[in-house]
Length: 79
Image (cartoon, rainbow, N blue to C red; front, side, top):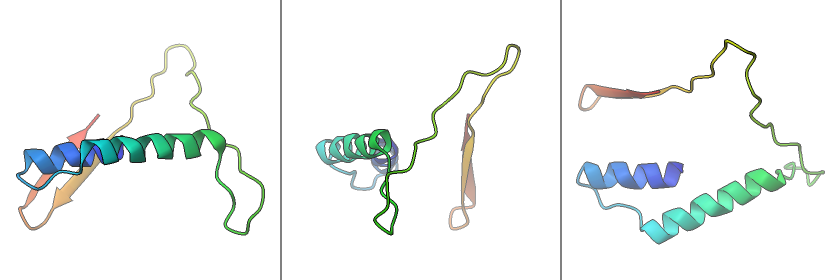
């Protein structure tokens, strides 16, 4: 998803975007790696992938992100 998002941003800001097919291929490969777990750098066993868990009643999970560019003195946030 990150690859697709970066490609979208590049296109939106007049840069040459990542080829959509390559971005999708990268995203699928990354999801597959996450689903199967990663091998430790030492060649050990795959580690368990942390999974999203349902919140308790009355609670919400909100993901946020932000970025700032000192060159253009601009920033953005997402929720």
